[in-house]
Every structure is written in structure tokens, then in C-alpha cells.
Image 1: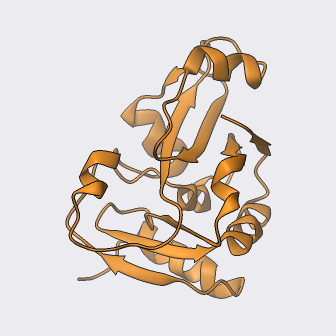
Image 2: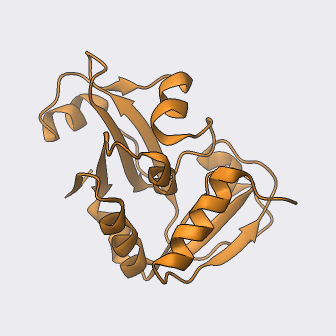
Length: 165
């Protein structure tokens, strides 16, 4: 299968900054529940990635948290010092991260040339050695080291905050 332009961009960036990855292909997944039903064992921490906006819609957040956690948006908005948060539209997801629903991932930050998206990382996802994310498509997962994930975040130059979610 030929990689999309957005997916290819992820591989190009990872190779450029020296991040090694393991690629796992699978059927399309849209939710954590779909991932849990896969017949492919994907090592490392699994995440839930949420693309949110504030009330005015002028600030956007990518929240990366453990897949087993539930997001309390009211509490999270207080933690980040924002007006109430809600899920951003598909149109905004496409505009800011170049992604479609089901493929939300920190790797979408390769498409955020304006550095508009603020990144919120659940500190619990950093406790393991490896972590996996979609490479901007929901038919594959790339597993990288937790240290390399932090290296990638630094490369993006987006505003990144770490907190317990």
C-alpha cells in the first residue's frame, strides 16, 4: 500500500531526526475499543489522543493520555487555565493537523507549520519504555521509545505541557 503524503511526512521527519520505529499494520481503527480488538500485539503504552478547542475556538489542544483513562474536560480546562474545552470539528482537525477522525496522533504535528496547537501530555504515558501512535493514518501504528517521543515533541517546537490527567 502506498503511503499518503501526510503519512510519508511522518516517516521523513522520524528518519531526519534519527528516530527508529517499529511499524505495525492493521485494519482501520477509530476508537480505543477498536484497537483492543485487533489481532496484532502492539507493544508499549497505548494512548488516547484528543483534539480539543476552547470556547472561542481560537486555541486548540492535542491531549495525549493513557488509553485507559477518561478525559474530564471540565477538570482539564481548569488544569490548562482555559475557558471550557470541547472537541474540535473535523474541519479544524484537518486545518490544524491535516488529519481525519480516527487518525489523531502527535505525529499530526508535522502538519502544524504555524505551531498553533498546544500539546498536553499525560505524565503517566512517559512511564513505559515504548509508546505507539498512528502515522497520520489509522491503518498502522508506529512504536518508538519514550525518549524518542520527547525528542520528536522538541522537534515540533509546539508548546508542550506535561501534567497528570
